[in-house]
Length: 94
Image 1 (cartoon, helix red, strand yellow):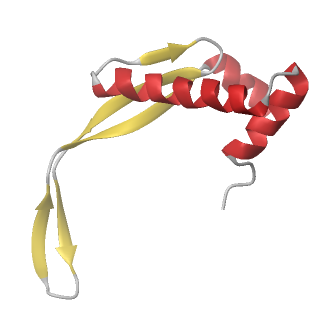
Image 2 (cartoon, one colour; image 1 turned 180 degrees about the vertical axis):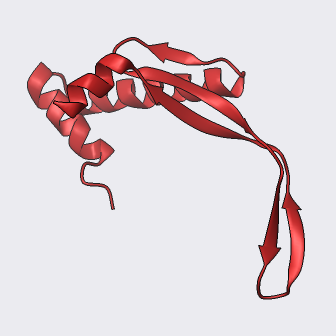
């Protein structure tokens, strides 16, 4: 289970900015939605100071089903990925 949930972040941001929680929630939900929309259009999203959100190709893989003993191949697919910026990584390591 996550230590901090989206609802907790919304409350903290609302408190720090004196903006209503409903407005902060709308902004965060819209932000997340816009990232998804651009990623589904196969565009990467660069947020300076945080990182880049993108879809990465996953190659087909051979897997074994131990219960039946059959070997299967997983199809190629797109996986969401986030590459954190060097600035962000340095700040976290402090």
